[in-house]
Image (cartoon, rainbow over all chains, first blue to last red; front, side, top):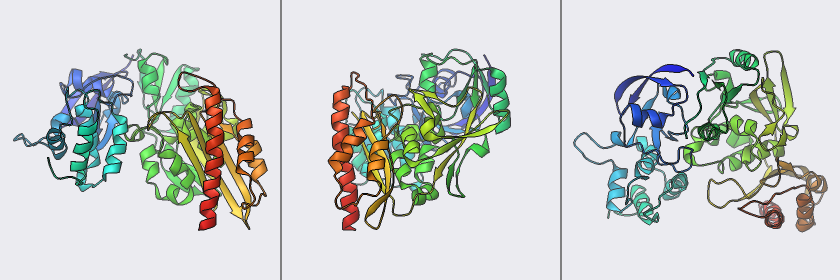
Length: 159
Length: 289
């Protein structure tokens, strides 16, 4: 068993920690760093609930080791809204369109859609919907999420 | 659902990685993108003593044009490869197949070489390497050798890469500009492994098939190269080609299994159908152009 010192930025905050080589990024974010918005579901890369942004890209945090995030910039769902509580456009769209019920899968979906629309990128509805294949939602039947995607893609006026 | 303990090491050169692999005597596991390995570790189906993270070795990344083709560094991320200008220009067949690998989120980490070295028989990357006639470069502490992709696979997850060897490059031969891509995958949901899959490249000169590389995925214990169909296609006039007869030959080179997703008969029946249709559509499109 090996232990490693890591340094990374999460939601703009600098973190230092010591991790076992086998700890996943998701476990570290949730268990050690306290970002409980990271929802650990299946723990083997199927459900997508634990998706976060690493250096701007949506990745499953159960399929990346914490030690591999050394030096990286991570954004979890907690880091998306403005300090005054104004929701990120993706969060607002999910809220407007009833894109969530129990909310377990939501942080992962929001992180994927936020990553795809970051830095002024304008993916179309088809691209955003395709990326949803990486998430499983058991409540909504997906139609609310699809409406949210249309709102984000500009294909539909805010509800 | 937590991995068993191991030592994590992060070599910064190929030589260092090969030394670690040699000294581990088979107890090491190489970590590339980790999109298959991480679940296997979590489920404790893989329990290495040493995990060798090759993500910090610059020579293993990127795409370059080389004499006679394209060299792809094994740790090139699938989503980076999808937008790579060299691959989009020179290997559209690979791009087509890549867009079906996993999900957007797993392609952000997953690598081309990781998939090829793993050898999942229903995955796109191993069969695409076989179809295009790629060869892989593997290195150990003592030697470098090249293995043709169609000699790489022995069975599911079983390859000719020895425990002390590291996959260091994939060399795809050049295919002409007007090469026709054959691709079709049948899966339960987008991102799932294929129940039946087909990938190939064809070139036509003077109305006749000049070169063909075709391989199945999800149709046997390894990528299954459609050798008889390839041989039958060469020299055939595209106008008088009997797609159904060639599909029968292509199916003859498969050995599908049945599981709870699909029976072997289903895979053969669907395979025969998609082969004939894909071949016909590809050649019709070319004739119309």
